[in-house]
Picture 1 (cartoon, one colour):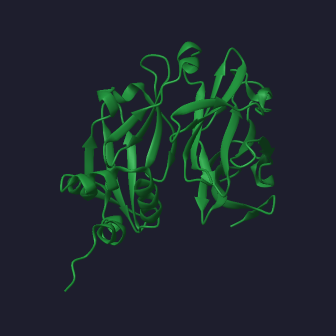
Picture 2 (cartoon, helix red, strand yellow; picture 1 turned 30 degrees about the vertical axis):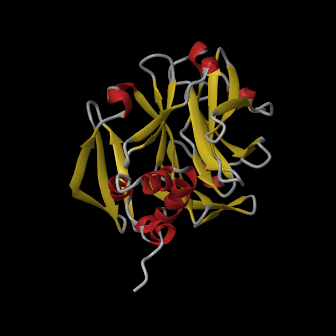
Length: 283
């Protein structure tokens, strides 16, 4: 029997293993360490495991970070594990801005807003340093999202409010640098009255929910960032969301934007809507 080539082992065997197991195999040789650490392998591996029936639920609690397994949509309570945060930062200082294919974008608000790109499975993380955001800081004034561009470069979108001005910038993992997005035309949501939700990526856009809890109370908007044109736009809410009070939560199902709505008229209700052909339909 002919010996399998090293590249075939990487492509057909290691590609199917969980991330924790891959970390152990990096010590086999310099070749495997280099192959299993490069960006192309990580990108392809993350895209393959995203279709797995087993998912992870990460919870930031008062003093700990807990990871649970979700299999077939059911929480496996007996699989809970406590993990250490990047740089041993206390969980109370951390705020999740976005999650994307096993990666989490978090803001360390212990000092300014230190952006951290984190893989909780492998425990690897990268601090995305940027002088602009360090100098111009307001607590709870950041959000962001992640996506791959057409060249498989991981991009990080970061939106920050400072003194009622919104600034959007995009980080390239390949170039390890930031650049400003000049078409940030949603400055009417820059007031401290507005709260921006964490992002969700669906299709070719990143979506945010923008809420005003002050005046007028209950005012809500949806903002979309097109990752190809790098333009911002707003989209309407489903008509059923005119009722108050309600809560909306984004989902991406089969690369289509969904929102699950929990509200109260006479009774508590929940509806699922899908955004298709520039309109909302009940799913």
